[in-house]
Length: 313
Image 1 (cartoon, rainbow, N blue to C red):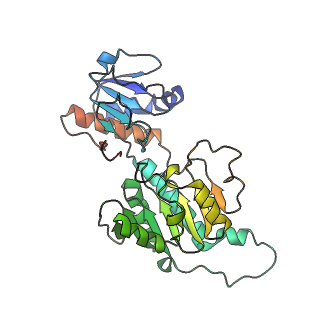
Image 2 (cartoon, helix red, strand yellow):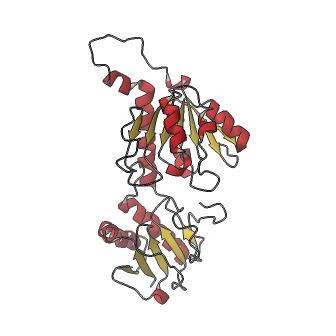
Image 3 (cartoon, helix red, strand yellow):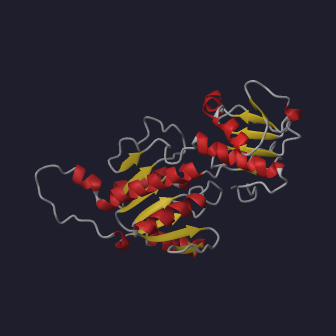
């Protein structure tokens, strides 16, 4: 019987304490599942279900643990932990993916159709010259073609947008113009009437969208960032917005969270702030991912969604 330590907050435990045992049972796994605040002998733990917001930071006592299974899609808060020698798996969850796709599609469509413009001009003037182009005439660039980036890019292409995708390594995706490398990044930005950033947080992506790269975007471009707050240089974005070079920015992630009440993003007329809600982990679907991974390991099969420590994701 595997012993599983639920190393997250007590609020998380409240959300998972029924659905995680149910998901394990559905996979035929009889397990001892204990929340970290109740305690379990580290030497007995086989699997650690982990959230960075929880109390566990030192993994060295867990010498028997076969894997650390993160509840978060991002692993930047744990991947550099020197005490973590166990295999680390990130969360790849259908519910999380669908939430991200819906957030991206909703905000892209709102700006594509000019909903904000018409909402701000309810003044009796008939502006029928402001009809949006067809989606096929609008270029949308998606930076990052991991699981979430690909899902969003495919949905945007399905709606009809002209989608360009960029990733560090070359990819081929049907109906998506895939670019890579430094030259590909420049081309992807130059074409981006709308830019969606879904890059992981790595040394290579931190501060990637600085003044120079933002300056490549077409005048009036719209930026959507539901990926990582560190990708954008805040000061450079604010300067580009003030100059009218960037038309609008919809931001869901930030360098400091919660976003401080005094941060200029809150009051800027060309910024929409959403409070890190684009891709929430949903306990029901996430529990099934955790159970599937444990079932795979217990059957002697490879772990799913294993993190490459050298790449940081």
